[in-house]
Image (cartoon, rainbow, N blue to C red; front, side, top):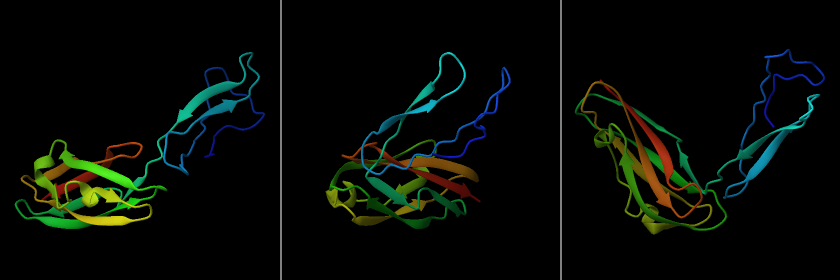
Length: 161
């Protein structure tokens, strides 16, 4: 469990609040659920909040791309896809979407990782950014594996100078 601003046994004034911070660290691929229960002196105690998350089998390194280039000039960076799950993943497709998608490209095979990635395996590809304008640009690279949470999103950010 994460941190809290609540103090055990301390009354909270009417209209007041305290905050409970939760952290999600999946240990398996899937859609785990749970419940946060807080016991208090209210007649409706305990207070409950449903929790859910998505444990994916794919991890990007880095977790987002941030590039800077002169307008009209291309820069590139390497990105790794890791299969952090316990079984092989089959990839179907990939695409780049978003407001500035035309200024980003990748040399990712179609399907990515030549179609599959064994548990614990990685594949590396290149993301390119060639700004058509000065200022901030953004897009998302979407990879479609047969694992939970598909598509997997890699945020792409660039600054044209």
